[in-house]
Length: 207
Image (cartoon, rainbow, N blue to C red; front, side):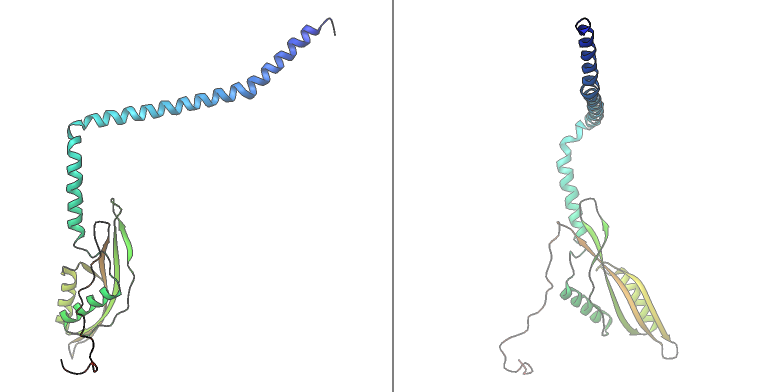
């Protein structure tokens, strides 16, 4: 052993070096190469983005005004839709239809459902209302046309028709899709309801 201790020491050092290489150097090298590849990819993506941005340097100053214009046009378009229809709003809408068509309408309250999500985070919603009707056939056609073209943006989703040809009486139900716009650009407007006079001992007394 004394004669060959240098050989044993050399072998031990080689084994230690191999272990250090396998357990430390190689993993570190692999991590370094992975980070280098990732960095190169990031640099390439930034170079491409920078080249694209240079193409639009001349219009950069116009962007803020363009964004403002787009926002204003969005608000103008969205203003054609109600932002919300609470139960009192639904009642007012049914009263509006009753006055328009000259008939009493029965319905059930509905909850708006998201229909389409827009790029600015707004959501076009639909409120489904099923109402009854009883009228002549010509009045039925006029009612359908009116609902489809009214400035209170709606569409007729479904119509059920029972027709008595002898009496010319059409009756059934119509399912209306009322469109709403859930957007930060809009504010909820409470329905304009006339407040009744208070403080009367008998509510049936004439004013």
